[in-house]
Length: 373
Image 1 (cartoon, rainbow, N blue to C red):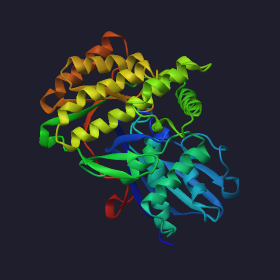
Image 2: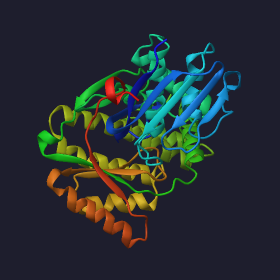
Image 3: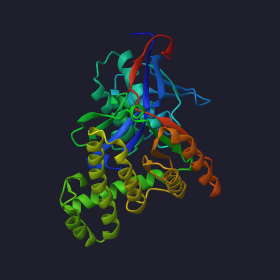
Image 4: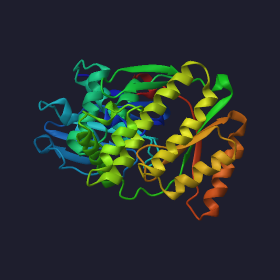
């Protein structure tokens, strides 16, 4: 066995396609420059040890005690990866260092699980493909931690490409890179972290998923992805007659229209009409706010401020109830838009937001030389 193996995996921003992943739908994420570095090395027999540069104390667990939903906190994620790799584990030490902002909806958890999966795969010489590592990282979150994520985050963290967003069909898991070179178009994608506290996010996420599954059941389809935009009105009429009609109508309307928006954005990007995606981003935010009901005042205020500052479009990105807003802007408009967002938050007494410009980065990969570890 090697002395150690190190990988870097990025966080992500979702350009459009929110909560569509677990509905077998379409998403359009990009990997970002922030990521998690993981180093896996041999450790004492029978013991797993987890060390984070962001945490003061290491976490240790005996391998026989590695059981789903028995651990809490950050170490449950790398522990879940090792659990997902199989029962015949040697003693290992996992060391991680992440600069993905926590609680911002930029998928720090997928960066963590994907980097650990890649490093462990290399150290243990398991020979798993990137696609298989996606499955391992997703199994860690779904099966070990108990987080009901839909798979988009792990897919983009592992398979992202510099200069492109990744068009993902979450039923077939087929992906296609779509050019998103904003510098060439003198544009910028501004990310503004609202820093709003996530309140009830996990429970509300699970509730949205249950509502979508119920709506699909009432409509007699495998998933809401199977409801076409042309058939939406008829579907909503049927859902309205259910005992949970009002809620199901809203949730289904968001998913069906969001899938359509993703496909429309892809078509515009592939025809080089980048600025024209702006209204679709803004429409996505309105749908999340009014139909899926997952925004909070902090992000709504930021979206409005960025639009007023000249953004072509703006929306919340991520699972909701806090997190980040993205805006598509002319590159030279970024300073004024950033200031407008800060002013709007201050006027409402909200926590001062943090902003950065991002562009599509490479997906997870092995680290060699001085950067390894």
